[in-house]
Image 1 (cartoon, rainbow, N blue to C red):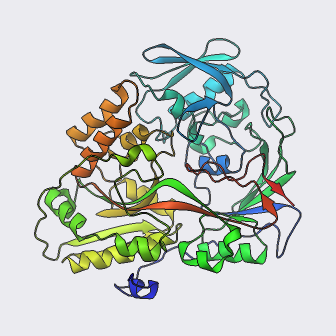
Image 2 (image 1 turned 45 degrees about the vertical axis):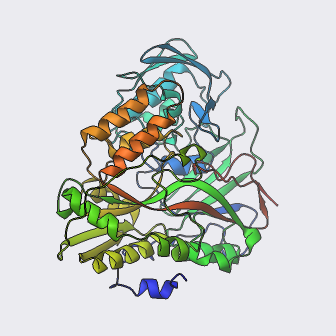
Length: 496
C-alpha cells in the first residue's frame, strides 16, 4: 500500500519553498465568466518573450509564433512556413517558403527575413539548445528560397527547425544592433493565427490575426495570465476566472470533475541529474550509491496518484519505439558515510518539491546528509546549468526541442551540450550520441544505444514518466493535447 501524501511530506525536514506562493498572477477577466477565454500559465516569461529562450514555448502554446517546419505526432517533419525542402549536399538544405504569409505588422515573409531570424538565433548570447554547437547559418538564395547549412552533416536539421526557439519573426523584431536575445521583440512581429496586443509582467492579451495564411482563428482573442502557484490555477478553474489551466497538480486531480480534465501521454520524464564534475558525486561509485538508494514506487504511486509510469529509462511508454531498452550496468555502489549532498528542484511543477522531499528521505536512509533547495525555475536555472548543486530534479520533455531523441541526448549529456546539468564529459557517451547522427535509415536503435551509455555513467536517474493533465472549463472546446506540449490554444479553440 503506498504511503499517503502527509506521511511522505513528513519524512524529512522542511524544504524552503522559495517562490512557490509568490507571484500568483492577476486574472484578466476578474471573478466569474467573461466573453474572452483566459488561460493560466504555469511559467512566467524569463526573457521578455524572446523566442531564443524557453519563453518560446509560451508563444507556441498561444498560437502566436510559427516555425519553418512542423512535426507529425510520430516526429516526422511536415510543412509549415516552409512549403517543402530538399537536401542539396551533406551539410546544406534548401527550403522553399510559402508565398502568402504576412507578419502581424503587415510585412510579408521572404527568404531574407527567414534567414535573419535563424541567424539571429544562431548568434544569440544564449544560443537555443536545439542548435547549440551545430554551426547553423542561413542565406537567402531567392525571394522565397533559403539555404540552411550546418558545420557537419545533420540529418535532423528539418526537425530542429520545428523548435519554437527558431520561430520566424519580422525584421522589426530585430531592431537592436546585436542578436542578443534581450532585444528580440516578438510582440506584433510573428505569423501565427493570434497576435500579441499587450504584454505585461502579469500576462498577455492576444487578438485574431486577420491576415493569417491558414484557417482563421475561431476566437476573436484570449488572455493569458502567469500563475506559477498550482493551487491558485486550480482555484481559478473552479471559480471561472480561468477557462484553461496548465499543469494540473496531481494532488488535486480528484478534486476536479473528470470531464474538466484532458489527460494524455507525454514524452516527459522526471529525472535526478547528478553532478559528475564536482563534489561527492564526481565519483561513479558514489553516483551508483545514489541510484541504489532511490525507489521510484512511492513517488509514482502516491505523489503522481498512479497517473505516471515507473521509469523504464530516459524514454517512456509514450514513445512506442523506445520499448526495446538496452541493458546497462553501474559500478558497485560506494560506502556511504554521511557525505553531504545539496539537491535542488524548482517550484513551478507542484510535484517536484514533494518528490524532492521523498528523494531526500531515501538518501538520508542510505547514509547521506542532505540539504535541499527549491526556487522558481527562472531563478534556479542558471545555478543548475553552472553545476551549483550535487543533484537536480527536473521534469524534461525528451523530444520537445525537435521531436527527435538525438537533440535531447546531445544537449543534455554530451561534453559540449548546451543543457548539460549533469556536467557530463564522457567519451563513450559522446561517441554513442554522435553515432545517432551518422546512422542510416531509422536512427532510433542508435538512440537506445546512446541511452544505455548515458545511464551507465550514473549521471541521471529516471524517476517517473509523466502524463499531461490540462484543466478545461465546460465552455471551451478544441484545446490541444500535444505530447510535445507545444500546443494548447490553437486556431480551432472555441469559447461558447
